[in-house]
Length: 468
Image (cartoon, rainbow, N blue to C red):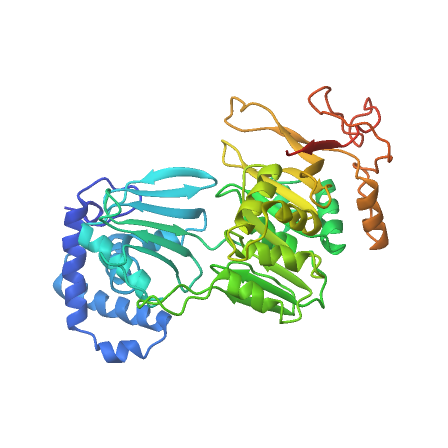
């Protein structure tokens, strides 16, 4: 029997339990021949190299006779089990995988390029999966058992991890690993079709002019990726404080303070929340505050910071549209222990938020900015947003792709003045709306890009919507 029938690779279709017995056997032999105290003193890379050499000697001495490729596969599997995360280790090293989802020992799914696929990989047993989970959570001094069946953690390399085990999970122990996102620049996002040059010019002006920006979108739409890219537009020399549940932002400026919340320990003590960090950040003389995601009472503190001198702050929120984002901010802010009338929260949001950038993930896996809107309401008025850019999607084509075009609408006078006073250009595709411009519903007539379409007429007036 060849090793291919005994060692997991992405193309194998065989008995994982046989694999597990083979790997466990060599792992036991490896542990018999190494000095654990000596190994613990080595750096991770040296430790792996030492184990690979010792295991190579064991295989040469005791067999089986293997080809070079099969031998390397077996050594990799055994060392991964001894040091790493077993069958998950190659997946964590694959740069094309953005998320790993383990639904019990027999199902492993991954997300590649926005699409979810099942891999022909399995854990040898429920016990092996639990050993892998325990190894993950132990790195952050957490434990998972019947008394603590749910755990959020972060790997040393930055990946976010969620674990939920029986009896809460009826399908067996479930493990979800979200890869640490690579820091894309806005120019790279243009090449991916997430936005275009005209939108980049507008976003650059908005961030530089210190407008408060909320990035909105559903799970997996790329909010953190866009937030990181937008932060690259902040000028050098400003003091930036980032606040996150799991530190993912990778700012390149020199003056950055990174804060990360802390869950309670095994005794249920020592928790530091996002709200605690937002409050503390106000005492740290920030020029800008960036919150990875608002999801509770800290929203009120963030809004108060935005409306009391900390202009140019950025945050993300889970919502399916720009109006939904404002409604969600109002709901989240009401979760604070400070009792503020719901109508007064409307006033807080109207004075704090300037821009909403909406992200959408389409059926073909692509992620795009589908709307850039301005909050034009004041005081306790109902939320009123003005759309200045949107993506008009077409039905999915025969090649399985979603195509469309970006449409632009004139900027209101107040925003044009704000850009002008901060020496920021107004992108040519947008222009400036006259004060008495009639409202325009883009569904009434097709849009023509004045930069590329010689038959285009004058730019349509801005779109304005009101949420009652």
